[in-house]
Length: 296
Image (cartoon, helix red, strand yellow):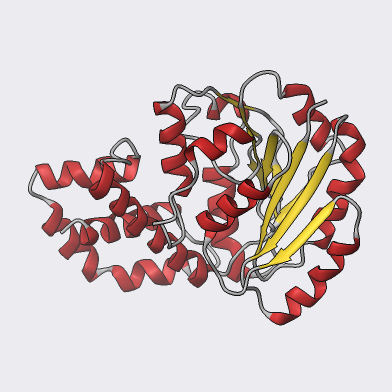
């Protein structure tokens, strides 16, 4: 029988509803299942809530003494997993329905890596501070499988990824990327270099952890820094739309002029992104400015 280890890094989130929803679907996997939750230095209140998971059958809950980061904690979870398939989930995911595990079980013969995707609520959040993150998710992240399959390794995200354990362990995640972002970019590149097939499915989880715009902008800036780190160290990321645009401006000798122009209107752009009607084109411009500044 095919065994499944569900791996959930936990950080400042009540993960009990997600775990209980998964437990209700365990029979649909038609094989042994464990759910491993590892806390990455959460605040005491969240640890207190999530500790009750340790009493549930089929659940392994543990805590790290301090935060080790997104890549290191997934590597630790994968190293301790018992079974041959790993399902990577973020702790702020919500299952779309009661057939989530069944769809993965039906598709696991198709490829050693299956990507289910991410979905967002169709209506904007009531809290205006969350609108930028919701808009970005709806327009840039929530893509059907047929679209993601056009560039299967480039459209891969670590959240909601079903992967054979030996494939994941052979590659691992780059723990030098201590900031937020682009761990999945490098992992997708490693899978492509290894010739490992990736199959995208329409089996999305709902993203249930929208951040306020200032937090999202800070994390986006970190992701830009990680992209530059990968490009300088290993030449990765040159095929991303953002880095292609920045390198083109450099070749044309226009990068400094663009930076100067944007610097003059940076305050206006930030005001828009923190408003109730943010523009993703303004966000793209801000990311390009950050990238050109990092590449100097």
